[in-house]
Length: 334
Image 1 (cartoon, rainbow, N blue to C red):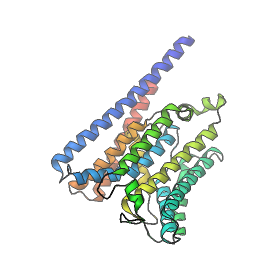
Image 2 (tube, rainbow, N blue to C red; image 1 turned 45 degrees about the vertical axis):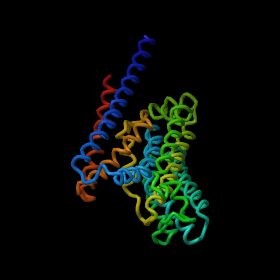
Image 3 (cartoon, rainbow, N blue to C red; image 1 turned 180 degrees about the horizontal axis):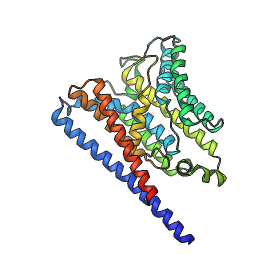
Image 4 (cartoon, rainbow, N blue to C red; image 1 turned 90 degrees about the horizontal axis):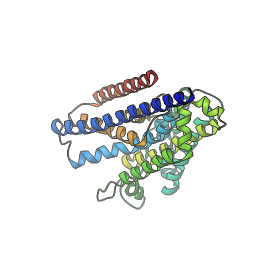
């Protein structure tokens, strides 16, 4: 009887991951189909300029998506990553342009601030037992207001030229000759996230916590510690996203960031990360990030304005969630 039960659990887990792999394959197929479609019917979509624009808009969404993938796999959610990114970028820009702090120090402070807000999320959820939705919603509002307060609701500007103060653009965005260095950094941190998720004790624990938190707690593992670390890492990736965003667009506006978290969360879900926790991969998340970027740039190439981009992006998100629900029901049925 015991062997039969174990066999059923193993088969169910295998089936669940097979369904997740199927969603990643479908997402990759969707990326290829969308690229071909927009190349045929869009204006100059297959040009080098459009490809660079796709990469540009993938960088900061990709970093946030990598961070939030850890959180979703653990069974949580983080709604503050978008405003956290903007808040830390605003403060970094303020320190550089108003307080005349060296650029390197300002960039480091950006990451520290975003990481601390991630730690705050983890503390509220793990120690004070607030629901992740409520805790991160509150921190979302706090970060949006905090950035505006520090900067006195003033737009902050990073150097736009590749001069002595604009060296960070060549490092995190692209060289003056046009080489996309941002893609290299995205790839490096993708590999780092992939290693942490698949090859470390932390990764094994968050998969287990997302699958059955109570069982993990009863086994003697300090769930609160690992969940706090999960949200802290998510904040760290938001800080990296802030640096890449500043290097790409140079202008950071107070009060913005709302909605960006949904794109990052959607990228993770499209790539096969389950909202119920316990399933997800970094590879799938990056596929989802590219799909979102291709969709937005492709719609622009066809002359659709921002409201239509939001409309179609919303449809993609709904379809991805429906597929996730189907996958979860299929798993429970089996």
